[in-house]
Length: 600
Image (cartoon, rainbow, N blue to C red; front, top):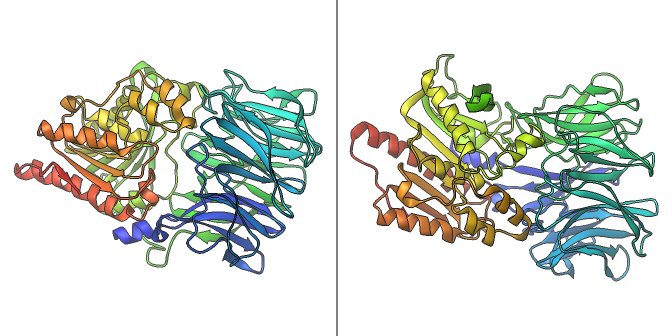
């Protein structure tokens, strides 16, 4: 597989939603520099882009965005770098409604609801859908707001404080409200210091539904105006960690049932909850489903993938017996459809304290059962995230070149309950590194990994894990750090407002990556426009390594932000990473040493 194939196949689909008998979603295409386009699918019409050519539909609210478009009566409302826009018809000019950071766009009764962020805090705002748009602030907070969801004469929303992350402490509020009016008598329904209540939405029965982790797992609850009750308790995560606004991990079918995405470890599946609370699994060909369900009648639109199917937008028909899946869009292209791929196997490794670490092992493509190869251990970003059981063409790029790729769900990952998720706080750079090293040691001990050819790689928070892993004795021969965090204390000062609480809770473990302790070659890959982990920190560490004559390379990508993998320079990053591993392997074989200190 060529690097061009791997990049071209990395189309990203997000923010699926239904309306007007159609499905809408965002497509971020690497060949377009990662710009996101709103695409519409309607039966009999197929797919059409409805946002302006060359315009990037993206939200930077809360740094990670979300809910960046809505469609009402054929009019597209969307967010771009300049603020909130309206487009009456495809091909019409953009109308700037208001400058600022907007997200979680939601259509109400004759108005658009949204979150607007500033350094002073958040506001819930409304904009009239007709006539000259009039923007009004409904409520404000020094902290954070999300999920404005209108019901009959009532409004629900979420709120969390400046010192919290929404997966730690988030509240659901309701208040009386009529379109064009004012919020009255706000009341907290759920959430608090030890509870994350997220994704409120009004059901067809008039009750308010939401997800809460009060049981230790995000499960679905129902408030009937008087009491809160669990809808269907399950030992699994029925909501995704809310990095972005606008998630929809569940939706309502026309027959009164509720479709829900459940995550258990690295696997995600679709279930349907009957009206009596019974849970039924839906047999779909997906092991990874994004938190964007869009139900219409007895169908559910979703974004799914599996180890052998690239991410695709699909429609699951749930009427009658066996579900039928209709694929509407797929990121695979003709040159690689049907290509041989490496399928992962779950590996469980015991670590100190009797805890188990789960990893997904992708053997070299076409290998036999007794394979033995160089290994790339990948620490996922977040660290409040997880490895996902889906086709990853960038992993396949390496497995097709004789490497095994291993994704590790280290301590702090999601998919294992609240306690596991919180356990990395104050231990960052320690327990996550231990877990990755334990998986590497197991692969070496069982003869899978080749000594001196085990590498660790991570992006963002995973980049910090990778750097700390080569700053101490261990099994790793080299590290690749993409968009890496270097100094948790300084990161807490420079990180966007949304993530400051995360930085404060994580730090206190291994601390700053110290150049003097780095023992193995390092490749840094970083975008100069990264606002989450600023490039200056990586430049400084690289300069310190240069002064110490420590083997390293620095690839700075001009005008690239935090997400290198979806940028126009993704191919250059993949080629540099492959060259890095091959150079280390060649140096170990020939003894010639590794060329270092280069800045590209």
